[in-house]
Structures are given as structure tokens and as C-alpha cells.
Length: 601
Image (cartoon, rainbow, N blue to C red; front, top):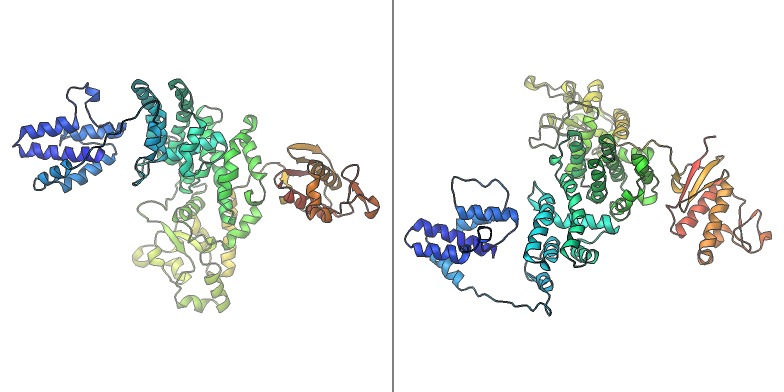
């Protein structure tokens, strides 16, 4: 119907231009475009969404001196049709339209379901979006007055804010998916959002819809800024949002929408909000560096993170929750990150991620930030040891070192820097790259004001030794930017340090804190709890043999009772006790349920 309406507008304009048949003008306008006897707000025969409605009225006015400043596909599509239809093929198009056949489908209110028919529309063409189905589901059962009320007060607002403004792309389906994730603690698949919405919100009265939609509407303005950071007025928050947007941390949106709302309601201040945004970046970016799977973030971590917040210790509670994660869910510590980063290929990753890394490294504590993701592309990534080195490099380095730089470190962080003269420096030797001043252009590292080139200005050669020294400088800065929370917190037993000769302060097992000092007491406490919860698992797994479970204590060197009948061996080192505890937790699928705190002395 929209396409036909646009075609008729083109035909109407051509008919006016020809000025031969005023009757034809009136026929097209008053038969297919407007109902001249209807109230002004109902004159248009086609009723699109609000923005497209304004575009349609603009096209009908046909005022060449007026410019339509909003973004609408109707304008784009009209211009296309206008380029295809002319005075020469005017009659051919009219004749083609006259061959269209209208099919009327009548429904009986008590027998037929309009929504089911709507759901099946276009089954052979482009599928209706989840948002289309949800909108119709909400409005279908309401009378016209209530439809107008719900649409203008709620749904139109959601459509306006849930949009990628740069791409002019609706994100309503994605937003509703994130909202349902927040509400249900379960992520709907992209093609099942409508089904989940129907389950969550059964068809109801206008009052019920208002009650439900007011909450959905509430968070969409925060979602808008997460996908369009430019709309945030505060420059510091905008910067952090742009980084999160660049890293595509969409899985964190349900969590971040709620934190954003807390900031908006002044439950937290600006500094806390900024720290949360930086914490999320550190968590996600460290995981990326060490190669941990992103699917874990989506399925388990961010979905429930907001529920873990303690309003009295807002930031601290989030930090503790994240660092208590273990295994594939863990927040990588400094040593692990430094070890992986040393050999990590950070050049062939996504360009957005690469520019994020080097912008943050360069601009840390810098009041004059450098942008390397801009349209001008003046600042680019430069290989110190080139990708295609000239022969001077093989002359300056022995063969083993040359191969090591080429094969092991070429695309690593230590061999990469920023330059505004990448094309000039090319594959030249290091001394040339350092001091180049061709035609007074000051292309060399010694002329660079960039922090990333400070070390390069001081050295005379580039080899394995200087590369490793520069890596030490960069890795230290990396850990400052993407920091690990410095808090006194519990440690998951899977991440705990060697327990040899150590005392405990307490343990938290199955969310219950127990004061204990000895590792043996921890060993006893855990196995008693596990045996009490499910003794069958001990007998149906390798665990029985590992802990030497028996009903005869005389078979053991130092028997430890797990109940009135059964015993396990306790004559073990602290390290071995930890290993058996970890084995048991793995078998019971409780890897993230035991945390310990070592005593200070």
C-alpha cells in the first residue's frame, strides 16, 4: 500500500505538470490519496508511523521550496520511483496499476483472530519484524481512541528512541529483547522475542497495557544513548559510552540500562557511573586479550549482574561479583593478561578494537586526546619492525633475531605504534624511521609528540631486547587503564594461591560464610555438605576412589567422618586437599560456589 501510494503521488505530480486534464488530477488525488470529506487529521488514506506520516504529508504538499529535514525511507523510495516514472511512460504505469486485483478478507470477531492473520502476512516475502508483531499485538484489541493513546504515549516514544540514528535503523526488536532479558533472566532468541513478549504480557485492557508499557518506556531513553553515545550531554560519560559502543558490548546493555537509570535518578553519582562503565570495559577487554569466550558473557554474567548490587556499596558489590567469577567466567588477573598480551596479535583484530586499544593507550592521562578512528585517518597504526622489511634489517640483526621479530612479534603490541607518517616510514631501517626529516617534514620518531613514541626517541636500535623493554612499559600502562579491582575480596578456590603453610580467615560455601582457620577444617566442611546433599554422586563417580570413601575407618591413615557411617582420608597436604575439593566441586557442578579468604598472618 505504501509503494502504491508513492506511485500515485508521482502520477499526481506528473498530471499536475501536464496541465491537460484537471479531472485526472482530482481522480488520482481524491480517489487514491486523500478523503476530502474526512476530518483534517484523517484525510490521508494511508496511515504510516509518525515520522513517515510527516514525510507523506510533505510529499503530498509538493512544495519545492520546502525541505524535509527528518530521515525517512519514504523520501528515498519516492525519489527512486520519481526517477523511473515520466511523462513518456505515465499511461503505461496507470494501465499496469489498473490490472491489480483487490482481495477483501472479512473476519468474524468471535471466530477469527486478526492477530494470527497479521502474524502470517508476507510469509513469502520479507518477514515482519518482531517489533511489527509486538506493536500490532498491543494495539489490535483496542478501540481506535485507546489505540491512539497507547501508540502516541508509549509505542511511538519507544520507536523514536530505540533507533540507531547513524544508520537510520530501528532497534525496537533488540531493545525489547534486552528488556525481556532483564525481566525474565533469560535471553530470547532473536526470532522468538514476540513469542516471549506474548507470554510475559497476555492480551489485556488499555489500563494493563499502560501499566506494562510505562516500565518499558522508562528505560528506552538510556538505551538510546547506549547505541547513540553522541546524545549524552556529559562529555566524560559520552566518551566511555563511545568506547563501549565501539567494543560492541551489547550483551551488557540490560545491566547498563538499569545502572544508567540509577544515575539518572541520582541513586549513584557521576563518578560511580563512570567507574562502572570503565569496570565493564576492563572486564570485557581483559577477557578478549586472554581469549575467553564471549558467549559466557551473554548467557550467565550480565543477565543477573544488576541483582547482585548492594545499594550501600554499589561499585564495590559489582567489583566483588565480577572478581568472584571463575573458570570460563573469570576476570583475568594481571599476570595472566601480561603473559597473553606479550604474544597477542593485536593488529589483525577488528579495526574498531584495534583503534580502541591504541587510542586508550595513547590518551591515558592526556588532556589533548588523539583520535585514530576519525574520517581523516591522519594517525594510523605503524609497524616498527616492518611487515616487509628491506635488507637493512637483515644486515642489522642476526638471522635468529630477525626471524623472531618477524614470526613471533610482528603484530604484537610491543612492535606497533602510532604515526602520522606511516607511508613515509614504510619498511625503512630503524635509524631512518627514528630521524627521518625529508623536505623538513619531521616524519621520524624523534619529532613525534605521541606518548607511544617516547621510548622510540631514546633508543638507537630495534631488536629483541628493546622490544621486550618497550613491552614492559606498555604492559604497565595497559594494567593502569584496564585495571583489576584493588579490593579486599574473597577468592574462588580455583583461583586461589598455593595453600601451603597458609591459614584461612573464613570460607563462603553455597552462599554461607563459615569462620575457620585450618585447610583441614575446610576440607571436612565441604565434603560433609556435599555428602549430605547428594551421597549418590560419591558412589557413581570417580570421586569415591579419589577421596578414599569407606565405611571402615581402619582402612585410612587419618579418617575424617562425612556422616555417622562413612569416612574419607585426611592425611594429605594442603595442596592435595584443595585438588580434591576442586574435583568434587567440578563433579557437583559447583565451581563458583566456594570462596576463601586467607588470613593476613
